Length: 409
Image (cartoon, rainbow, N blue to C red; front, side):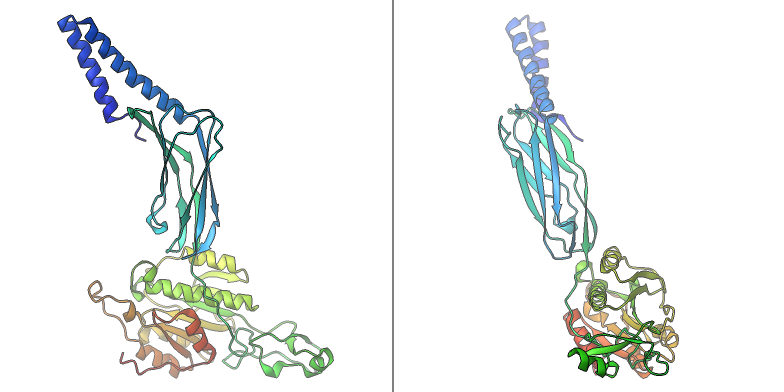
């Protein structure tokens, strides 16, 4: 790190050396005294600044350390001094990446004896998901005359995890994710009578045909019949993260819109007791289970892939909910064949809406042909655009709205 004499200090020493040399040549003792005094003054200033550097310590407290993009976090800095500082002011800089808004800088007066620890704070509003490093916190201190300065690292790095935005959704399609819906999923496995069935309270999305009227009348609240071991169930969410299938830059890219939709849908399903499996376009499982934090952590670090096509996920009898970028009829054929005899649901992104004509020359596939191919295969199809948030798309999905093909594309 750059430290030591400043330009002024180096010039002062050079002047002192020059004066001393001239004093010998001219036999002027007074000039020699002045030269030595100037040199000693610069060296003492450097010693004072170096001593000050060693008596300062700091801590950083970052709250929260996990947050959604667009939310606010606060970094608090506590600066301690072991004794009175003889130097000049402190210049504190906490390094932040551009995605977090740039590095804040504080200029403070030198603490005096008996002063409490210096408390500083600044806000952080991340706009881009990911795992970011806050820090290191560095201090630059100078002597009162500005002849020397030193830099030192006071605090290391703190990890800030920025999760994708999650929009609160409401409602569930009838039986969605329980393995008991009409859309290609098997119903509850029932034997003779109902000895293998148990009951629980009604939850939004339960099929009305599963209502257990005897228990409902007995408990005076709506109860539904469920199997102890459901045949199948859960939802497989497929996220198309192919770089060639998306457009846009940064937080406004179509991939970020897809990730926000997937995060919102998965969170909503998990909160409603559904088992969710998140898979990528290459068929790889990214996250599985019932813990929303694990799933959001995976989405926070997701990057575009170079995979050329779509691979259908393994069939497990559950529902398939696919969020797809730019695709053509050939791209969706593997998905259609992978769910033959079943049913899928897809949100097709109209990526042309994210494309800038001045910055993008690659052709964009139209949304109508693949939407028609999926709809003909029995899929529920919706179209995603940047002005339509996850809540509007989900509401349309819950109403099972057909895709609007009269878009001209």
